[in-house]
Image 1 (spheres, one colour):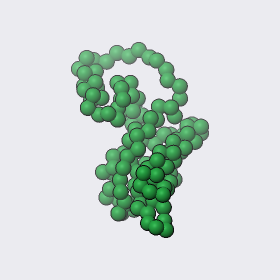
Image 2 (cartoon, rainbow, N blue to C red):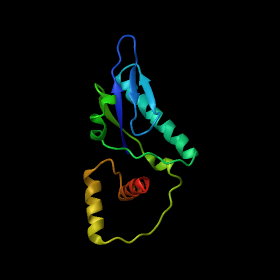
Image 3 (cartoon, rainbow, N blue to C red):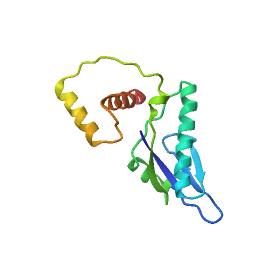
Image 4 (spheres, helix red, strand yellow):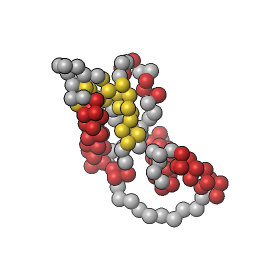
Length: 135
């Protein structure tokens, strides 16, 4: 899942600050832009690990465009961090499902053109997660 991160530039006296808008309370910092982005990954993974241990909801990432207009993030630099959330959802279980050929072809075509969806199973899992989290 591609989590947007809002990065506040640092200077000679301040670190580069990072906030993950889709994960409340997830903040980090780094000495430079590259370090800030690496630290953001660690912060996200740490938060998700705690949520998984508590059997809490894993937040769905939204697009950067959903946050850009928010005045809280004025003057931020935006990036995304790719996090494989499947390890926070529990042990994988194999199942056999039946789908109409047309739908399966559309899913495969979507996955082919969207690298954030690593496989057909990953697409189905993320689509199900989005629907369930909105419920």
